[in-house]
Image (cartoon, rainbow, N blue to C red):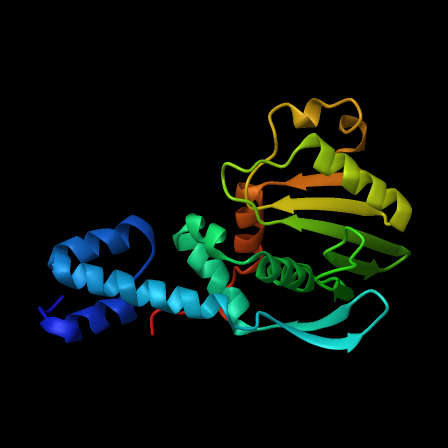
Length: 224
């Protein structure tokens, strides 16, 4: 790589950067600390702006919320940010996470995805319906928690009550954090997992988002 000075070097690496260790090694090789800090700030500013953008397109209003009609480019960009820096998950507002999860169901090919209102959602943040030989209805409760804030057994039991009242085929509890130790061994919870209830922690969530965002047609360049 030809040596480039000043802001030109920052812009050059920004438009050619990769992910992970290769990117970090390139920074250390090509830039002094001052320019490394400038580039890091540039990425942070971009990430913050992406988190404020619309990640799903909303359509018709129903009795349960708003139907999701499409997933927008910022949804893909946020997933790429999370792949580069999983801790960015804790900087995303709760409502934005609900939109991201709704977008995930749309990307997964569900026929009807509903984002419920901020209040009065009856314990359902996202409702996803798949039609085929029959109808499968999934409800998802999203908990955007920090690492030290674990989902409790009481939280899961509450969702089981919501699932029963809703009559859905299956319930998901999705968190950016994790579940309390031995929660899956709870005798009131264990019989329902995974046939009627799935517990998705932060790592599982990231893996699923990565899978859904995969493919050349979804490639996103985060450097602007």
